[in-house]
Each structure stands twice: as structure tokens, then as C-alpha cells.
Length: 277
Length: 332
Ligand SMILES: Cc1cc2nc3c(=O)[nH]c(=O)nc-3n(C[C@H](O)[C@H](O)[C@H](O)COP(=O)(O)OP(=O)(O)OC[C@H]3O[C@@H](n4cnc5c(N)ncnc54)[C@H](O)[C@@H]3O)c2cc1C
Image 1 (cartoon, protein in one colour):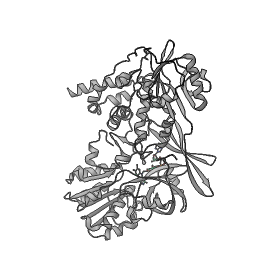
Image 2 (spheres, protein in one colour):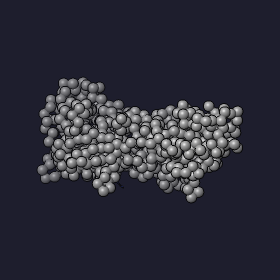
Image 3 (spheres, helix red, strand yellow):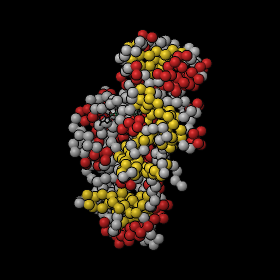
Image 4 (tube, chains in turn red, cyan):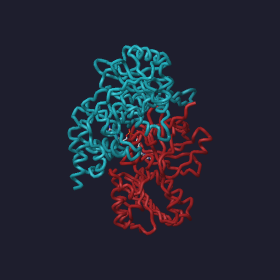
């Protein structure tokens, strides 16, 4: 008997598919093998590859929390070949799951701190399990400020959950869009400008931010202006990757592989990379 | 264990090996020396500088099915590929054996790439030392030697009467014919000395040269044909895709190259390494710096294939010299 290849995915059943935005769906999966279901533990920030057999596989953040044991969830935005094939699937379909891969947000180290979450678009996917872990263990953490932006109100990925997040003690949810619509009465502003407007204090704080590269760039600038140090600002890097094992060399940047040394890095680490990503 | 094998004995030994195993050896096809599966012993070529392509495809094929998807009564089964047959890889140069040892580092690092591992376990390496050097060789500058036996099971050295045979490993010893000529006093010819490239000097300053405009100037003439990666014994970037043909689905791994445009492009179109200069720099930095930091050895064996085949004469030996001189200038 040869050892199992790390390229063979676990088989899983698609339990439900929920439309989150016009181009993003939430997939809830259950691994076919009951023993695997119990052993598949993961932490916020980690990711897995999803396979649409016959089309291919691509990496996605685990958008659920492991300890709730309510299935593996992924928020998938349709952008290309694999993501379109996944969007075609109906509940009951079989997909492949390979993972979990990568490091995670070191939430244990953030206990007692104020947490600022800044997410743009599909960048909320890795932040959702962070938020849920904090609200499930509310006393372990200080104040929670969530700043979430999207192109339009319809593109706010986890809209149905905002009320739950905001109802948690010492928590605030601040939303913003690039372009409003008739129903929208909230902010119309870019995420970095909202950061400047709200001026969160760097005192005893950690900021976790994910989103498009351009948003990250200006959020970083705004946070530095407010006095945040780079070691207080954490993000996930996205890199093209094909294996998740540090082998295909696609996501290599300097001495690191985003898939196994990341995807979570502080800006202090990123600024020391020989190559800027 | 060292002895001399006559040309006739060598032929009959190879014939014997072919009976139970796949024999892969250098052959001449339309004047190109290539590793191919041997059907008749006469096809084996022993007189050549080096093969056009390295033997890396024996372990990491240009295209290889990782698993096949079977659908049965609505259920899906994934059938992993298995390497069944024992293989003898015959006639590889010491630099290429070193290349295989370098491929081992990423592929066998935990979690081990089991398919690669099977190819390695099932293949015996019979090397052929170099009696002459090609103009583009520089193995001695990167820790190799024309008669280096380190990563081989058996090393052959051609002499007038036939071959001096050295069994390097127990596995190699077991492959040799039982009836052997007595141990030999014959000395292999002293190895030729390839050109010296200042690798150590360049490595001392390579970090300082990262931001230099040198890389974009060098890339001005690069046409991103990926040939350097294709002929390289140590390049191992790969892509993974699904192929569906008549209902049969396979997940396939193929060679990729960091020189391809779009190699690092992510969803949304952002590409952190969109310029040719950044991509070309990645090739040299990965080989000379990042791989070395990760695995303790640079990933170049000095075979010179990229030098020989680059259509625009980008020469890694010159690049190494340029890194050194730019670093010295920058540091002064
Ligand atoms: C660690 C990690 C976590 C991730 N988490 C998530 C997540 O939670 N949710 C999520 O939705 N995504 C996530 N992603 C991104 C996701 O992996 C990609 O969206 C996915 O790989 C796209 O695959 P695809 O086959 O659908 O797209 P592809 O077909 O590969 O296309 C990808 C992009 O490249 C462009 N493109 C493709 N070919 C060309 C070309 N020839 N010329 C120009 N442009 C081209 C496409 O327009 C598209 O924007 C994550 C990525 C990483 C690395």
C-alpha cells in the first residue's frame, strides 16, 4: 500500500448553496468520511483547495469556525474557470477538499486586545471566522470594531450577519460602499477614508485587514498615520498557488511560500520581504 | 568495488537489465541526444557531450496524471497514479544526478510527493563521468565534478578497453553482473576542468543587487520562451489542471515556468510580478538565494543547458559575474 498522495482531495457533499451577492455564493460542505469530519480541525485564516472535478481546483479561505462543527463553509466569488464551475453546482453534488493549509491569525495572542477588522469585498471571507471566534469568546477580547466596505450595497458579502455581530457586547459594525443605491442610507466612502474618519486608537489594538491590494495599500497608509506600528497590522496575502504544500513554487516570494509560511503575515514581516508583493 | 567491463560485456549487461526493467538511456534521434526508453541495446549512445534535456522527466514528467476520477452509479472514486515498473536510468552525467538530488529537496520535503517518491524508489541511477567539457559547463563552480559519484548508484568512466565500473551504493552493487572481471588497477583519466564562475562572491552581495535596474535591462532581450526552465535539471515549478476526455477525468500536473506572463497573476487581474525584469530576477534569485536559504544548496548544477539553448544569449555565468561586480560597486 503506497502512502496517500497529498494531491488527492477528500470527497465532500455540498449541503447548501446560498447567494451572498450577485457574484458570490456561500458553500456549506460535509466531508463524506465521518472520521475525517471529526479530524478536520482548522483555525481562522487557514484555507483549503476546492475541486470541481473535470474543471480543476482553487484555494479558498475557510469561512466557518472549526469548533462549531456545522460543516465547512467557503464564500466563493465567481471570477474564472473553477469558480464558475463551483457556482454551477447544486446541493448534493460531490466536490473535493484538500487542506487545511497555511498558518492562521494568532488569536490566542490577541486576547485582551481591542480588535479592528477592516475588510473589503470578498476579503471578508477569512475575517468572518475571526469575528465569530471573538463573539463566541467575547470576554477574552477588548472592543471589536468592524469596518466593511464593498463596491455597492448588494456586494456586502455577509450582510445577513451584520446584526448578529453588532449585537455582541462592545462591538460596532461600520459599513461603507463605493456607490450607493436608492435604498442605501449609509456611508458612501472608500474604506481607507472611513478608517481616517473613525480614527481607531492604536493603544492595545490589533488590526486585521483583508481586501483588494489597492485597498490594503491605502488602509496601511491610514493606519500608520494614526500611529499603528506595522507589527499591529495583520493581513492575508493572496498568491497564485497550485499545491498548498510549498512545492509548486508559484507563491514563492523571497524565502517564503505564501501557502505554508502564510497566508497570514504582519506588515512588519511583509516589509522585510526582499520582494514587495 | 571497481572493475573494468569490456564494451561487449557492457552491451550484454544492458541487454540483461532490459529483460526485467525499463531501460532509459541516451539515444540519438535526428541528431538530438535524448533520454529514451531503449528497445534494442544498439540504440544506446555513449559518445555525447550531454543530452538536450536533463533526465528530470523520469521523476517529474512534463505531463503526469496525479489521479483519475471514476464515476460509478453516481459515486465518485479517485484513483491515484502508481509507478509499477523498476527502471534503470543509464548514462546520466554527474551534474544531472546532482540535479535529481536537488529536486528531491522540495518534492520529498514533508508532506512527501508520493508519486515523485515512487519514481525515485523504483529507479536506479547509472552515471557516466565526463571525459571532456563542453564550452558552457561549470559544474565545479557549484560543488560538482565531472566524475562526481555522490548521487549515483553506479558510476561508469569510459576508457580505451571499455568502462571502469564503480559500484557506489549497495543497490548499485546488486545490479551488476555476478561474473565480473577482477578488481582493477586501471585509473580513470583525470577529469577535465570546466570554467570557473564566481558563485560564492556573487552570493555574498546578491541581496544588495535586488533593486538594481540591471534586471529590467537584462529582461529587455528576454522573449519569455521558457526554454531555460524547460532544459533545466533543477527547475520544478508546476501547474495542476483537470483534463476531461470522453468522460474520463484526470488531474494532471505539468511543468510551468516562473518566466511565463501570468505566472503570479491572481483573481481580479493583479500581478505582483508583472514586469519581465521581475520575472527574470525571480529565476536567478530563486536558484541562487531562496532555494539555498530553504534547502542549503543553490539550485544550479552547472550543466550549462540554459546557456547553450537561450535564443537571446542570457548566460547565467555572466549574470553571476554581473551580480558580483554590481554588488562590489554598490557596496563601495
Ligand atoms: C490563500 C487564498 C485564499 C483565497 N480565498 C478566497 C475566498 O475565500 N473566496 C474567493 O472567492 N476567492 C479566494 N481566493 C481567490 C481564489 O483562489 C481565486 O479566485 C481562484 O483561484 C480563481 O480561480 P478560477 O479558476 O475561477 O479563475 P481563473 O480562470 O484562474 O482566473 C483568475 C483571474 O485571472 C484572470 N485571468 C485568467 N486568465 C487570464 C488571461 N489569460 N488574461 C488576463 N486575465 C486572466 C481572470 O479574469 C480572473 O480574474 C483565495 C486565494 C488564495 C491564494
